[in-house]
Amino acid sequence: MTTTTITFAKLGNGDWGLRGPSAQLIPMATVTVSKKSGETKQLKVGTVLWTRDGQSMATIASAPSHTRVDSAGHRIGTGASYRAGVTSPHGRACPNCGSRECSAAWSRNSLCDED
Image 1: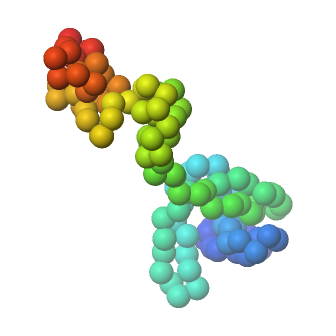
Image 2: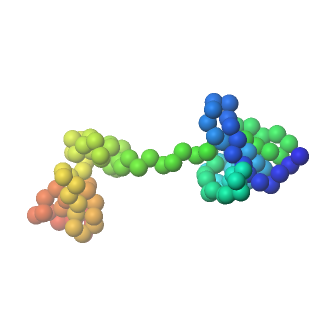
Image 3: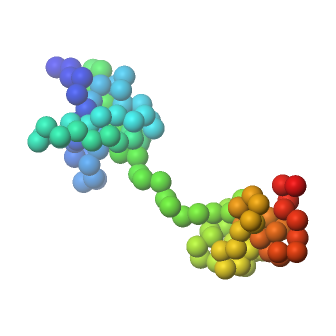
């Protein structure tokens, strides 16, 4: 039995995953998932766990973290970026380019790095 519908399925660890055609369950692809109620939902495919007879089971890709990081990888919200000397204090940004890492964000007397 092959189906072209992607549905929710309970994974071995208790989380919800996706079951459907192998051709559609490709990591990071956005797919339309059908619920038992008939509603549909758009989700991103995570890791494909298995494939058999044209059907696959996959995880649901986790939502992206809204944690902002600077160009050096320091978390901005925790103050780590400021303490590392990468981003300006108090959320100040360059009035020209909008960057918190620009020289003008640190001091209003400085010129924008992009100029």
